[in-house]
Length: 112
Image (cartoon, rainbow, N blue to C red; front, side, top):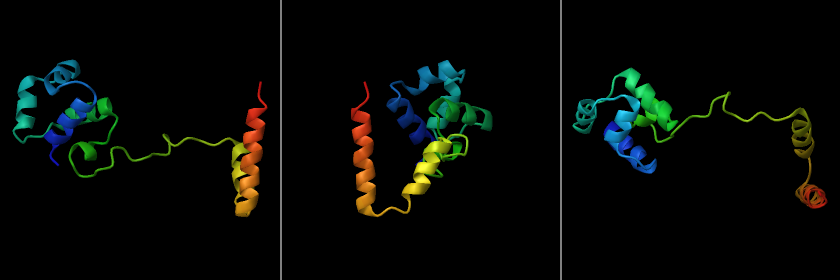
């Protein structure tokens, strides 16, 4: 997939078209025409577009189909209590795990 294909598809997915998005991002219509004809943006514009669409530059360039690789910063951290629960549950049998899940559902149902 080419840069243009990815860029165009992302524009359509976000409910816009390339030229109006270009205006919003400060990109000339001439640059967008060059991309449509097979060119690729410079690194500054590529980063700007990747940030706008919350995807990687490699995704934009068609080097990967993974929109955004998870990073340590973007991974949700787990509280100490939840981590203890995860650790404790790892040694449970399937039957015990099912009982724990049922108990959790019971506790949630008792909330006011």
